Amino acid sequence: MRKYLQFIFTFRFMGMLFALFVTSMATATFIENDHGSRAAFELIYGSVWFEGLLVLTMINLAGRLIIDKLYRKEKISVMLFHLAFIIIILGGGITRYFGEELFLEPFGPMNPGIRKKPGL
Image (cartoon, rainbow, N blue to C red; front, side, top):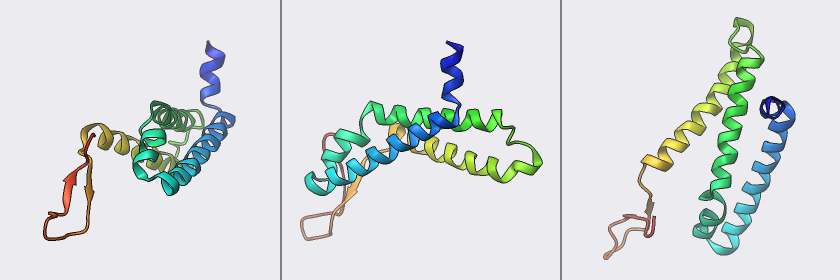
């Protein structure tokens, strides 16, 4: 069990997470181009595995921050870089679960402009 936990904080695991993240984002781009943004959201962005990928990335970054002792004065710029990504992922999670899904349509005589997304 300890061996698996140590693997979560390795650079190799971060590389695998990054490769999976890039591949899934590229796939979502092609899906969105061919089938629309709703299909990309349902298949990639709204899936549990994609959220898990982001959580594992955040855990890996936090672990590397502690293991590599990035809180020392001479490594403060690298620490800020890691913290920035952790904050971005946390902010995205807060927005996803506590925010409200809206979309903007072109204004017209029968269209107020901003509406809630149906079904979300």
